[in-house]
Length: 107
Image (cartoon, rainbow, N blue to C red; front, side, top):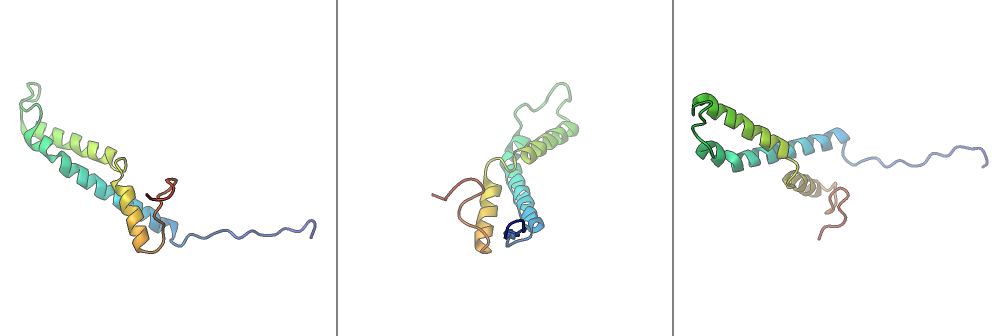
């Protein structure tokens, strides 16, 4: 009918957006924990123990730990573990496909 307004069906996600965001956040946190474990030998063995500025003290060890924690947090989400977890968990819950976001079909 001319001049009439029709409403188009808007697809509703199978999972609430906040639940999907929570899954992505948890996966990114898990990736960060994994990266911290990978970086732990740098903290324990150090590349430059005994820095003359700080003197190899407990403060230096804490500073290195904080730097490695920050590095792991920053890198989390960038190596693909979090996205893989989200994709696999979504498949297991029957609410996703094998393709990741904007990645096309899985090989």
